[in-house]
Amino acid sequence: MNRRVFLSVVAVLAAALPALAADEAAQKPDAKKADGKKPRILYVTESKGFVHGAVRRQGQQLAPSEIAMKQLAQQTGEFTIDMTQDTASDFTKENLQNYDVVMFYTTLDLPIAKEDRDYFFNEWLKQPGHGFIGIHSATDTFHDYEPYWDMVGGTFISHPWSWQSKVNITIHDPDHPTMKPFGGKEVEWIDEIYQYTHLPNGELDPNNHWQPEKVHVLMSLDMAKTELKKPYHVPVAWVKNYGEGRVYYNNLGHNNETWTKKPFLDSILAGIKWVTGEVEGDATPNPEVSAKEEEKAKAAAGG
Ligand SMILES: [Zn+2]
Image (cartoon, rainbow, N blue to C red):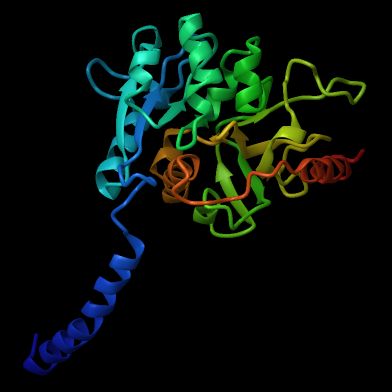
């Protein structure tokens, strides 16, 4: 490097540095929750049905999504996280006192004691600063247990869009903190997409537990653009209030690849901040959005 170039590089750096430092100070206030402590997450990846690759541990090694979450915690410094695949031992009233957020990537009926379940749904999750984050098969969990499906917002029936499907997703609320990372009103993604289906007569299958009047839908399949079309609304992500606690669910995350994507990881990070009340975002139920998507899907699928 010749001297003149070197000097101009130094000048540019000197000019850039104060701005950078100020920016960083603005973006990273130290306080995390209202009480200034970092949110503490319990990430549950126990599977009593299908075991996804993203939650499959190899010997002593953490599963891919567990490693991704641990790295996210380390790189951002925004939260701490513990992992469990043993809810019988770790999902207890006593142990829940150590956490602010419970995150599920699970399948079917977990062996949580009834008194601990009751405590979780009736007390713990209803407290301000407490939240539940459901990822992918969190909706393929506790199909017949009403407190759970009523909380999570829907029950998986099938996934016509397989893991290799490239789907188009409409983002209804791009300003919601959990959606901002996707950068606009639509996003293309390759992942497995769940449906909460309709019966042949057009009525909702009573086993799907989808309750548009109780959730604020954030993402839906864009049936007009997605190759495989179905004549009904397919929600992909939503939020809801639960007492004074909060719930964020996102269907993405079947593919290990998804756990390497910044928008997805940033959305989980934003979800942690939103469910704990560190940042605000609308959770008003928007059944009108579901109704509109239903009409759009019918038109796209040809009636
Ligand atoms: Zn899956």
